Image (cartoon, rainbow over all chains, first blue to last red; front, side, top):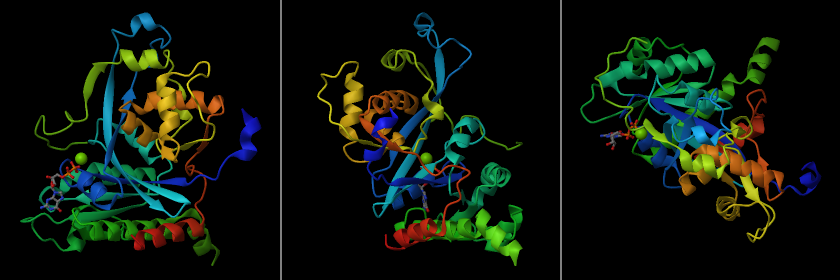
Length: 199
Length: 127
Ligand SMILES: Nc1nc2c(ncn2[C@@H]2O[C@H](COP(=O)(O)OP(=O)(O)O)[C@@H](O)[C@H]2O)c(=O)[nH]1
Ligand SMILES: [Mg+2]
């Protein structure tokens, strides 16, 4: 298996970003707005491993939980592929969240000021996990206009966490959010911390 | 988490309980490849297959065909309408037999270098 290694072509490396937030907040919309491909949907299944998986006779009786995720792609030159995953519904699907967050460069938490509490679980999750994130307030028509500082306060965010307004339907707006996220992740990378503490 | 939610507000969309006979048969019961391939592990076909090769199923050949250009596990799964776990197993077969090469994504412990951040920022700005 290792014999063919030398002829391995140079492949683009994937970078994962997540778009999280409550139901209907605009995750799929944002993924679709910035993606170069029509957003795709993939499924992960959760199976009970304790049941013998080689026992085909038991298979028919078995059922699994299936979680679907929307995602899009942005090709960056021939070196990187940026994948943007909309996280599935909160709370019940942490097993998928953990998989998505593993190795992710950062996350966008979308918030709707009419239902700000809907994004608490996402904020908690990324804080606890140490995943860099920004909060993007999706401006629906008719939603109350809060000062971004008020949103920050209501979400009890650290002062370093960027909070910005966006329109999930607009590509330019989504782009801007992603740029802020990458800049934030860059400033938070372990090497940056070392640079600061070395001073 | 103590959040108020109207019952049935969401999740149904995501939650399907169904038997998975077909995928299990397709992978001969193997389900073990999750640790090996991330959703964004990228695969590309490096050796063409005619189907005459021993031990390759139609699904293997479909993957080999899709991966003439580099594609992630998630994309292969979406295009084939198969759960990602099944694609991981099939991709493992193709890798073992030398038909595909894979590129793992950045691992959790790797620190992205400055060049990577810069490339991503430039790429996004150029969109
Ligand atoms: N007016 C307005 N509608 C939006 C905006 N973003 C999303 N929507 C709509 O809100 C609904 C839910 O969006 P969706 O992306 O599916 O939410 P998700 O559940 O977070 O993936 C859809 O009908 C969208 O068209 C926005 O910025 N403004
Ligand atoms: Mg959605």
